[in-house]
Every structure is written in C-alpha cells, then in structure tokens.
Length: 501
Figure (cartoon, rainbow, N blue to C red):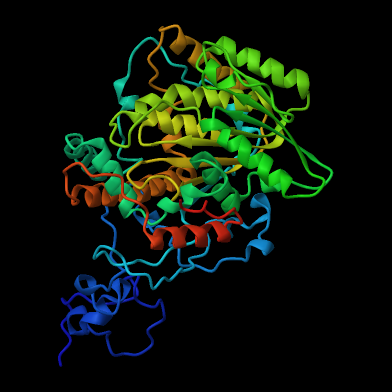
C-alpha cells in the first residue's frame, strides 16, 4: 500500500502510544487502519462507546472528575479485636471497612427482595490536615479572614455546584415537596419498613443517640481510644437526646475494668436538668441554651474550674427539632454548629476529639465552618451512619486529635454567634470562600461525601414515594429486620435488641 504523507498518524505524540524510538524505515500505520479497540485503549477494550459497567467516565463538567469514585463497602475488614486506634491506622486504610453479609431464610410478608446486609453500615470520607498546626495562624490574616459584615451576601447560604451536584439537590427538594402532602405517619411507616437497619434502634442501650455513637465508636473509635484501665475519660455532652451519648460513654467505660469516666452534660433546655447530678455526670442548663454566648461562657468556666487541663472528648447533638421532609435544615444548623464548635475548641485539651452532627454541607457558609474546624485537627472523618434514617441527610463529623492552638478560631466563631444572637448579623461567610475552594484536598472529599449521601437520600425518598400514600398504622419490624439488627449490633460489640413483647 503506498504511503500517504497526508494521513493522520498514530505516533508517540499520542499519549496512548508507547514512547519508543522508531528505527524501521517503514512508516507507522495510520490511525484509521488500526482496530477500534487499539485506538481506544484508554477507554477500555470495547471503545469509548462500549465501556463496561464501572468504567463510565464522569462528565467533564464535574468539579473534580477524577475524584468521583465512591468508597465501596465491599472491602476487607479487620477483626474488631485487631482494630487499631483511629489516628494510628494508615490514611489509606481508614475508609476501608467490611462488607459482611447476614443471610436469613425467613419469609417476608411482602414481595420485596431481601438484600444482603452490610455490617459496617456506613459511608465514610476522610479529610487529612496536611497544613500542620501553624496553619490556623494564617486564617487570621487579611487574606483569609472575612468576618461577616452587615452586607447580606445570600450566595453564602445557597447551594454551590462545587460542593454537590445541583441536580441531585433539586431531586431531593422535589421529592420532599411531593411527600409534604402525605400524612407524616404514613411517610414514617414506609421509611421504617424500607430500612433494613431500623431494628438497631431497639438496642438495649436505650435510644438512638446511644446506638449512633456506639456505631461511630466501632468505625473510628472516638470513645474507645480513651478507655483504658486506671485512666479517667473526661468528656462533654452537648445536648444529646435523653443524654444518649453520655449513657453510651458510661456504658463503654464500664466494660473495661479499672476505667472511669467524668462528664459534663449541657442540657438543651432547663427542664432536661431537673434531675440531680449523677455520680460521674454533672448537669448544666440555662434559660438561654447553647445559642446564648453568655451561657457558653458559664459552661466553659464550669468545666475548666473542675478540669483545668481540658477534656478528652466533646460529643454534640444540639439541633433544632426537624422532620426529614424539612427543606431548610441547612439554614437551621448554622448557629448550633457554630455554638458547638465554640464550646469544643475552648474545653478540649491537645490531642482531644470532637464529634458532632451535620445535616448538609452544600453551601459556602457550611463548608467554611467545616474548614475552620478541620484546620484545628489532624484528621476528620465524615461518616454517614446507616443508623440514621435513610430519608434524612444526617451525617456525623469525627474530628480526631486537636493539634492547633484553637483560640483564634474559637474567638472568631464566638464573635459571629454573639452578633447572630443580638440580631445584628445574618451570616454569609466565615472565611474567604475563594481561598477555601482552592484547597482541593479539602473540597474533593467534601464533594464526594455530599454526592454519595444525596444519592442515598434521593433513592430513599423515591422509594417512600412509591409506597401507598394513604395513612398506615405503625408497621412492626419484620423478623429479617430484627435478625439483621442483632447481627449488626454483635458486629459492633453492642448489646442486642430488647425482647419483643
């Protein structure tokens, strides 16, 4: 065949071709003469249009197209007895938890197919602070510091495409709008029936907050890390439901001979502290609650007077009463998270751990708040526990090992909360959003976490929408759900479910 010098050649200029020296006098073949699967070797053996499942390329308009692979739950799991402390595990191993399956031959009352149960029951993304403890000092410089002004920048409280796929958020909003016309009891019953993990809330520990913290403790060990013989675990509980976090911590400490606990509970309302102090748990409440800066100062002073070196652990659940169908959880959480972080950064000792709940992180303001907290700690895990209702956007943030001097961040957040409490400020930004978006090692895992949780929420809301909409009585949990719950609880080293009456 004569050689046409005008033909486009497949040479080493193409990145898919080996960069080897051509010594032969025979020209290389043209691109058109090569088989299709060779030309598209970078797209898989079947070409760009025939990629197999799992090889689909993400749209190029995504903010981080090369970072979209979600952590899959089908990886190997260390035996619980061999698990290392959270900060001692290699970074690459942190997201890797088991997918173990629980099989049951019990017949379901409905035709839904029984799905295998992932005993790790979580989505997890890790943020590593590679800036070091001195980076907090840079946040106070004019380049970073952007204390909220009187000018209301509404964009700071609107969802940003750099934090989540906007189409997913629109689908969630539309599904909630459709379900808003359905009786709440019907929605709750459908969600409970569709949730294979619903039975874990019947754990003998007592309530959902205890089980949620117990599950987190299995995954990243924020409590077990400090439970050792002949050591006192000092902790602060910021308003967990029915003191559930405190009850779990006291129970976990009681499982280790010689270990002790001392705690302080900030009650969300004065009525919650009417009972006397427990032997190892001091109760505190003021009419203003945790959103009152004066109450925060009083509580911090009380803890510091009784524990001058600071506490090991702060766990927080103070949050507004809400429904999974609420469309403004993002707006409601700002003040609570700012208040919780302010307390934590003022009472934690160096090396301490902070655990709190968030509903979403899809607006610049919420991401900036998370960035400020993240900057003070060595490592942060964003965990979507399957103990949470599938129709909610709830996730827990576990901030491990306080390494920075947090005084400037705490003062910055307290100043913002003070202005908000006085009605002088509607928050828009906490630091420069432009600078935060340039921190790819922070933005990428936050984006992946938001997308993964939003996808789960859309799936759950659509499943509830597909159920009958007429009011339904409370549906008892199936035997499969109870068996699955006991399998999970045993895997997490928690007490089994209470006997059914």
